Structures are given as structure tokens and as C-alpha cells.
Figure 1: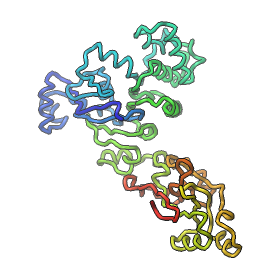
Figure 2: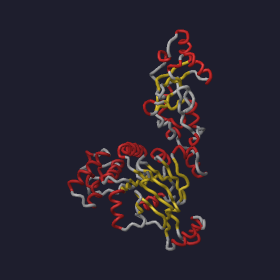
Figure 3: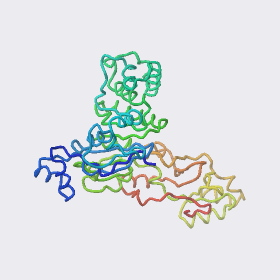
Figure 4: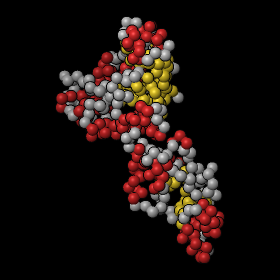
Amino acid sequence: MSKMKVHQLTKVFGKQPELALKLLAEGRTKEQIYKQTGQSIGVNQVSFEVEEGEIFVIMGLSGSGKSTLIRLCNRLIDPTSGSIEIDGEEIVAMKATALREVRRKKLGMVFQNFALFPQRTVRENVEFGLEIQQVPPGLRQEKAREALALVGLTEWENAYPDQLSGGMRQRVGLARALANNPDILLMDEAFSALDPLIRKDMQDELLELQMTMKKTILFITHDLHEALRLGDRIAFMKDGQIIQIGRPEEILADPADEFVRKFVEDADLSRVLVAENVMKRAEAITPDKGARVALQLMMDNGVSSLYVVDKKRTLLGLITAYDVSLAISTGDSLEAIMKTDLPTVSPDARLHSLFPMMADLHVPIAVVGEQQRLLGVIVKGAVLGGLVGKVNVQEHQRAEVMSDGRRA
């Protein structure tokens, strides 16, 4: 469900915006229009939708138009043309009174430069937006304390900004945005002014908060690794235009053009790709089939082990060719010889988190979903292939496993 829809949004800076729009419609470039008219195109016919509860990252270099775009989204800057819908309500033509209500109830903003009042305590800074809305003192103090608890600053409510570290001051800014319980958080280079280690801590904190808050977040950054780490989807901007939108793994696997390709070529794929991206088909058998059928299935598929699953594809265990050979002579059942203490991961586990596990294992790693349903298997070769770019995520198909070992 779309929380925010932006359609053909354009911002022209200058005294002749209509002329610039006409030239854009004729296909002129940003540079050509500036040279001919002196009008600067800040945002050029941008369209995208943000789903409820997702972190949508807008990524671009300085001057790409990303900060202008986020200010258009809450009308700190008025667009020259285009539309912005929040919960289906168009806000571009909205009058001042109605717009103030939307900003108060649905939008929260976190800036790069903290924007704290030095003469106010931490709690008083968090209360500021509620104070502007004339929320009674008792209620706004309660809401401020709840927001401070969310960001781990309860014990600092009576401190002043100059007593806090940079990361703590940014958490105060985040708490202030959260105090009003907005549906949508707009975060403009929110962590860019922080030292690298503090920045990573803030990213971790945002992701942890998002697990419980489920806010819709529009996040602006120029840092690729931050975008890949935070974004459910990423929009790449260049010269005021969006040139690609997709999930992090899609963008890495299939860059839209040379600009995006060069941008992402040094990305750490192990922190972006997940188990589902590299898992392979898992050969499986139900325990009633017996040892001879299991050995034949291994020979037919050229494997030395099989997973044992029930009729609902729930993972029960693993059998090896050696153990099956012994079972044929002893008459043991598959249930009697299968190993049940198996390494498993969820389909959304990041590849880098699998490295310690893989270093100590001599068997594949099973990928399981809800109720331990077997989805696929990860082998070292597949992981290495993914890290050198051999995984085409768009063509990847989840490996469903039938009880007789065939793909569903």
C-alpha cells in the first residue's frame, strides 16, 4: 500500500519557470536550459511511490537534487509542477491551514545539523514540536519521555545539548521527530555529520527502532553503503532526475547505466546479498522412501547427501551416502540414521553473517522459512559466485523442494 506518491515533480529555480518547463517538455537538458534561459532545474519530472512501513532511500552526489526533493515532499519548497499525495491526499495545492495539519500529524523531519536549541534541555528540545501545537505541558512531557526512551536517552532528559556527544544530539533530533508519532519520517543526510563509528551505531539504532515502529521513512544520503544498509528500496538521482529505483540487490546485480555501475562497483556484496539470492535447489526425500531409494536419488542427482522432509516440506534432518549405504545392509530406517542437529538460516540472512558458520562446516547450510519449511541450500561455491557478481538476482528463483527432490 502506497503511503506517498510523487508524480512528475519538478522544481525550477528562476524567474521564468514556465519557459523552463516548456523546454523540458521539448527534451532539452538541464545544462541546455540553464545556458539558454538562466533557469536552474533542481528536480526534473521525478516520480516514485513509497510503500507504508518501508525505508525508501534517495541516493545521489552533491547537487543531484535529493535534498531539494525531500523539501518538496513536505512543501518546505513549493514545486513548480507535479503532484505529491500522502494517504491519497494531494498536498501541492493544499492551503496553508490544511498543510500545517498534515505536517503536524503525518510528517516528521530529521536534519543533518541536529537543529537543537542550546538553551533548552534535552526533554524541552524534544517537546518543542508539541509545544508549537499547544499540547498541554503534562501530555507533551509524557510524549517527550516516551520518545527519549525509544532512543535510549531517558537518563539525559535534563542535560543540555552541549553536554552530549554528536551521536546523542542526533538521537535527540530523532526523538523530537518521533514525539509527535508521525506516519512518515523525512531524514535529510541525518547521519552525515557523525563520525564513522557513531554513524554505524545510529544506522543500527534506526533499523532496530524500525522493527517496532514500522514508520514510513524517506531517507536522503550520498553514502552508498548507508543506502545499501538501510534501504528497502533505493532511488538513484543524477542531475535532478531519478535514473533507477530498486531493491539494493537488484541495483547491484543490474545497474541501469554506466553512472550507477561505477557507483556500485566497489560495494561490499556480502552486506547486501542475502541467503535467498545464492541458495540452490536442495535434494530432499521423505523418510518413508527407504535407504535404497535415497541412495538411487543421490546417484541420479550427483550428490552425497539428502535432506529429509515431511509431506509439508518441514526439515527433519540430513542423510549422507555413507550412512545410507550402511543402512541398506543393517535395515535401519532413514529416521534412524539422519542427523538432526543441522545448521539453518533464514532466507533474509546477509551473506557476511554466514562466513563464520561456513568456515567450520563440512555440510551445506539449509535455508528454511516459516515452520522450518525447507526452501533451499547454500554451498560455499554459490556464496563465492555471488560475491564475484555471478548471481543475477532478477533471474533467481526460490528453490522450493518437493518430497521426491524435484523443484516445485
